[in-house]
Image (tube, rainbow, N blue to C red):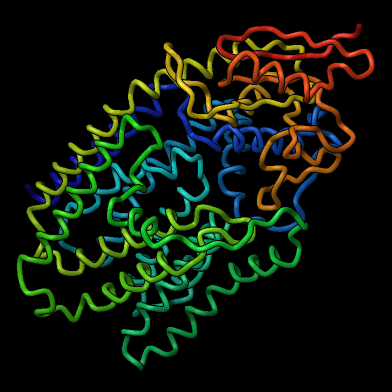
Length: 496
């Protein structure tokens, strides 16, 4: 297959990979609903319409690195509404990663490799289902940054340096982790450059200053908030993220088999590439990328998995190690199978993963729609606590919405979600003022008390117990009442 036809097939596959986004109104992204709510509050605050949140939340004074996704959804939401804005961001993520991987690959070699097709299953992996929207954007930004620097490393004109500096700023506003990997990757690749390019190295360093300045301001201005203890990954868990490619999984048991098959196929491709010829024959051009692979693998095993406000860093580190391996293989593309074979296998694996998740997507979307449609308009302006008591619980009709799906109800009805998890950290554009959240005993803190409780995913007794506890039944003149919304219960306090 010629390169032109391969490109056409690739673009068609990228478009087809959007099927879940276009078919289902809601997808099971754990943190996604909270980000939609955060973007909605940003838009309302800017427009001056935020009666429900006025005085309860404030702008984060620090230039937080999670602005990109929120700004995108806030702007898009002003034109098309919050639900379509989230889907547009998902479209951007699903399209950008394969295209950016292709850009990086073509920066390494002009020969078609078919390796860009590997991004099709990868983009629908763990991080998208966790709702790490900004991090998913940052993966595409990382590939573009590294590819752009590699293409123009020999001609770092003012224009090229300006573009690269802007790309670094975009990367910063998506994820600090991706920015760190860009800088580390470029530093490692620069080690193998001729010594006479020392001036280019100094120019490269100068172009990083705007992004580093933003990072410094964030460190200085970041409000004091909860901090995660620094922990390091168990070696077996770190290895599982890379060897078993756990980063391809959605979190549902139904797709583990398909993800494992995809991992086996990926490692079979690596084995074919390694064994086809002696590994280091005429391989000087691949040494920088091999060094990058070794660096990223070391980081995967040695870097903390949680530090400060960042958690689940090890599965994120694994993605960069995968990128480095793909770019390393591209540096010796003559060792790869026919690009059409690589692309065909990747497409089949992607179809298998979609097929294994399709029923779950449908059940989840229907459950969320039921939750939204059944919630009364009387929630507008009220302090709402909403969560699932058991995220993984299933019933005969499908699955419960995930814990943060209550944020969708808050968006639809204009409620103030007091357990909006973004307000409990200092890494998002908005921070709490009068509401300080809900503590481990499920009691509301701050001077805004819980006025309604929406619960699902638990037994009737468990939901009644938690609803009573949050609303303070038995104190003063409060009597607990509830409405049934599909699998959920909406509790409120009636006067005796």
